[in-house]
Image (tube, rainbow over all chains, first blue to last red; front, side, top):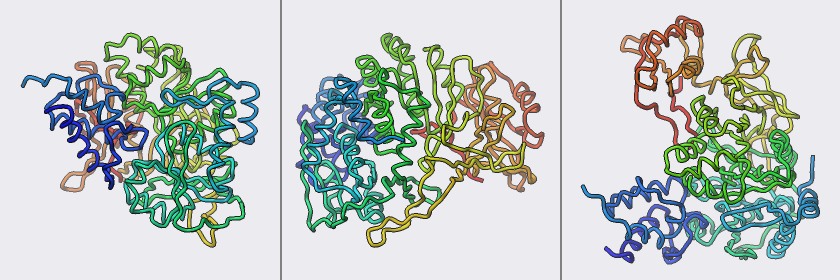
Length: 86
Length: 487
């Protein structure tokens, strides 16, 4: 799965969870914090979704607000990490 | 008391280049505030007497809008952008707002609720762009200010949110008290980790204005690395937080590989904590990393803010004291001498009352002169008020009442004990006994030790019948409060 596909999946999740009616407003570079989309509970939900959907162990990593600020940033983070060996 | 506009003008004269508001990389100095507010006002209809909802995430836009709306005499209703649609609808119906300030994204989220309400879309960028959208003409309010200058909706014990109506004097008194008990001045720089849509966050804006001090918004315990970077780069002296955030910051400083974070923590001078008692464990950890820290624990409610405070330093006795009443406040325990009872507050920050209705554009509230907190407390031998906890958590055995914290607090002082929870247990025959769960370092404490201690502290009736050593005791995510059943 490439970065574009990852970004699309994340966008679908965020639109669904935040009840945004017009998803055309949620571009890859929209600031999810400044625009009032992500709060602490949503961050936890989003991280859980990413771990489950993309198979990456994110919660054990040291990621910052910058890594989650936009859909593009989060997709870049996920695309760049190697999956955990199970 | 002080005038907010005058305070900002004075700060601009004395400290023009000093930062006042910060959010991430953006900063507004004291000399820039006036022009920024004028630019906002030029894009809006007159706000005096209007009821305005500010539905924005933390940032400079929200801060400046709060200041301009307050200065013009609007009634401000802060609302969390993360509130569920049902709550937003409830507030819209109760307040009958003239205007709602929101981002275009939030408008997309709540558009279905706002068909009859005028909306101001707040753009990002500097200067701030505002786009007013009105389906109907705004009402002519004749610039008559309401005595209600802010309405904060709390959750309330009935489950229906209550609208706490606050006057200009309530808000500015709370700000003045905050400045006074913390000793805020122009040398101080605060990291505010509580949101601006909360009473606790809003009064920081006003108190830092009158103190001519800097305040940084937008950081939280959710991203401790970002918080430490801000503390370091902005030479933060004060952190305004709740116990949960303190735990998150300490966990990060102690568990991460970031030695710089521990150094950064040592440069913090003050912590201002509210919303819940700080546990002995948290205090020990905070002082272990920074023995020079001064922790100001403030007790109050949205209904009666900044009521009591206690300064805790390394070596202070650990107690359940909430300290002494703040200037202009009176706090007492409604009980015969020597007994525990409900904590009651009166004074300058006590609300006007709870919102009842809007009738002919006038805000009606049920007026109060004091606030019964629903917290249980007693006056200690030290003359200070000690907080036991919520009244509805009291345990009753054969007509004798005891708050679980009277068991937990002394147990938590034992070396090796990290946490504890006392609960009333009822068996199938209706017999009630006390069960105590304890989190402790392996081998550090035994059951007999706990019982020996409690024999000296609590009535025999309340000695735990069962003591369990457990790995963890559940606490709420946000406030770190024990999750207790109500009796």
